[in-house]
Every structure is written in C-alpha cells, then in structure tokens.
Image (tube, rainbow, N blue to C red):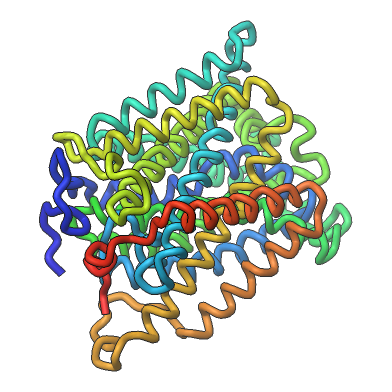
Length: 472
C-alpha cells in the first residue's frame, strides 16, 4: 500500500492532509509512555491493597490480553494504515453504527481520562505550591498541552518522546536501585533485604483469588492507552515497519516496567504497609540516600500525567477528524491547518476538557474513582471492537490474501476468543464491586444516547465515503 503524503482516506481537506511526520523513535516511546501513566505511580497502591504481592499475576494476565488485542490491531493497521484506526475498522468490518459508536466512545474515553490526568497534575503541583488554587494548575496543564498539539504533529511527537523517556529512566533507576537493596543491602547497612516480603505477610495471595480478581479493573485501567499506537498509523512515516516493532515490544516492556517495579517494591516493603507512608517510589529512593527523592518523583508523576494528557488530546483530535471524514461528525472537523493538524477537531476537544476542569473544581473528591471506572468501560468497549473487527477482517480474506499478510495474529481465532472472554470477565467484576458499578450505568447509557443520535441525525456514512477505505 503506498504510504505517501496523501489524505488518510482520499478526501480533500482545506489545509492539506495529515502529515506523516512521526518517526520510529516517537512511536516506540509513545507506545511505552501510553501505558506508564499515573496508573503505575498512583493506581498501583490501591491495586496492591486488593491483591497483595499477587498483583504481579494480575499485571501479567492483563498484559497477555493486551498483547493479543494489540496484535489484532496491528494486523489491520499494517494492512490498511488510516487515521481513524479501530473506529475505521469497526465501520469497515462491523458496520457504520459500530464505527460511529467506537469513534465517539473513544473520544469521550480520552476526554474523561485527560480530566483525571489534569486532576493529578493539579494535586501534585499542590505539594509544591499549597497556596495556589488547584484549578489554576489544571488550566495551565490543559493550555500547554493543547498548544503543543496545535503546532504540528512533530511537536507532539517530540514532547511525547521526552516525557516518556523521563518516566522510563526513573522506573529503570528504581528497579536497579531496588535490586541493589534486595541483593546487596544498599541503604540498609549492607544487609541484603531479600524477597521474603513477597510471602511472609499472609502469603503471596493474602486475599485469595478474590483479591486478584478485584484488582483486574484497576490493572486494565493502567493499560488504557496502548491502543493509541493504532491511531498513529495515519501519521507514521513507515507504518509497515514502525507499528509491528512498537507492538512487538509492548509485552516485554510491560513485564519490565510494571512487574519489575512491583517486584522490587513488594520485596522491600510489606504489601500491607504500602501506600500508608506515601509513594513506594519515593520511599525506595530515599532509602538509597537520595534526599530529594520526593521532589524527583513528584516531578516524574507530573510529567507522566502531562504526557498522558498530551496523548489524550492527540487521540481525541484524530478520532474526531476521522469521524468527520466518514460523515459521522460535522464536516468542519475534517479540515486541517497548513501544518496538517486537525485544528477544529482539537479545539472542540480542548473546549470539552475545559468543562472537565470545571467539574474537577466543583466535585474534586469523587472525580478520580468515577473517571477511572468510566474510562475502563470505554477502553474495554474499544478493545472488544478491535477483536471483533479483526475476526471479521480475517474471515473475509481468501487463503492467498491471508498468506500475504505482513503481520498476523498468533493462534487465530483461539487467541481472539480467549481475550474476548477475559474482557467479559472484567466487565462482570466491575458490575460485582460497588465502587466500579457506576461505570456500568454511565458507559452503556452513553452508548444508548449515541445510538439514538446516530439514527435521529441519519449519520450513516455516505456510500462513496464508506467504500473509500474498505479493504476486501
């Protein structure tokens, strides 16, 4: 498939097409940065409380499911690299309504997630500047990340690269430092700490299988964002090469960053004390004799939140652009600036986020729990659509076409069905636990509202447009 500087779906836009300016290093670190958000630094303490040291199992099981989902997305993205990614594939293989729901749901999901990330920035800036009202930091975070996205996709890619690098270097330093404490007694007068904390406080699985199951929803929230790699396909310089590389390395990185970091933390500290004395990352660095550890980690968490917000604004803009190109959003959102940035789509998303900042100002206490559960529901819907679209896509290919696929799903279709079953289990668990049940009221209600709008406004894509990107 030719990958030149042409509009993603062959329709003219005012300022020209999206520009293919994201290189391999940008996309690789975006893939990584996307899944190391505030979830690891903030959400992990809550998940550890539920599962104890067995939280590592939750991350590995969730990681395997994500690997299958990403492989399914990669198969379609390499075959047909377009800006709308999974919303486009849902439309092509599952029908216009599925594409419409998936696109708008994903837009909403990132709005909600960005609000969580902006909230986190405000909370952590408050540690340094306790007298400044929170909403000022929230507004500053939104303004700066919005500006980066409006300049050019290359500016977005550069910011994301450096943000992700800060997080990665910090986690590797903590893992290495932690191994020093465990094996050589660094910061502990030379007495090796060992790993007995993994089983000595009520066992490896202190709350039984129930605890592991309870933690899965938090774990899956931490993985939200990996599918963003698919959205970069429309602006990647060489999608056939960069996307498989980025996807292929996701699982190993998850093992290193999530499981590695948790292994170190849970070996050094009894699991039932984590979170009670502040961030385990801060405690580990302080133990190594780094006096400014709290300040360093605070800085890292702020960049992690800004990075996630940056990626979220990118995602909402690209999704809205793609929906507009398919006739499923106002045509104005399909226009791009001279730099190939979908400016109108980005401005609407940034405007909607301002409302989120306002909500954060009015009800700050409840925001985080609600937001994570609603976003998890939205992510699960997206992942289910990716798996279903890929099953349909592969089933529609002749044997010669199947053999010609450059990048393909392992153990198809068994792997897809197992991943689907796992996602259904996570939704069942969300319904079972009271804290996360709110998502199952708001998420489906939003999908019903979208369906009503779809039929009321007759938003089925125009025939010519619908066929333009279809790959048989």
